[in-house]
Image 1 (spheres, helix red, strand yellow):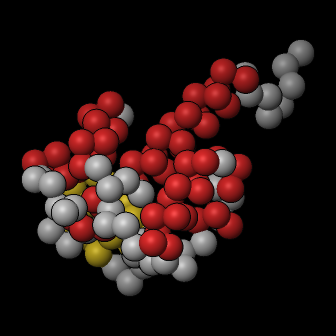
Image 2 (cartoon, one colour):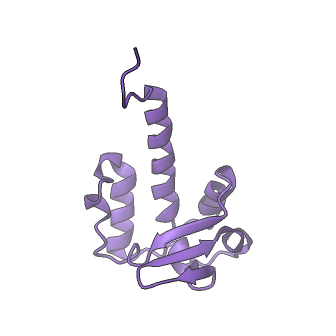
Length: 117
C-alpha cells in the first residue's frame, strides 16, 4: 500500500539542487553563470518579483533560509549593493510588467553583453 504524500528522497534532493541553482543565478553578478543556468534548464522566460532586488527584500525570510550559504550570499549581495545581472537586464529584457512582477525573455539574457561593470 502506497503512502499518500510520499516523495522519494532523490526527488527532494534534485528539487533542492535546482532551487539552490536558481537562487544563485537570480542573485548573481556573473552573466555567464546566469546564461549557463538558462541553457542548462531550457528556460524561456524568467518571472521576477518586482522588489526581488531591493536591499530590504526578505529573501532570508520567505522559506529560503534552509538553503544556507546560497541564501546568505544573495542577502549579502543585496545588502552591499552588488550589481546583479537580472536586475541590470530587467528593463531591457522585460516582455511583460505589472505592479508586482516582471517577466524577462531568456533569449534577451542569452544575447546580452555583460551589463555588470
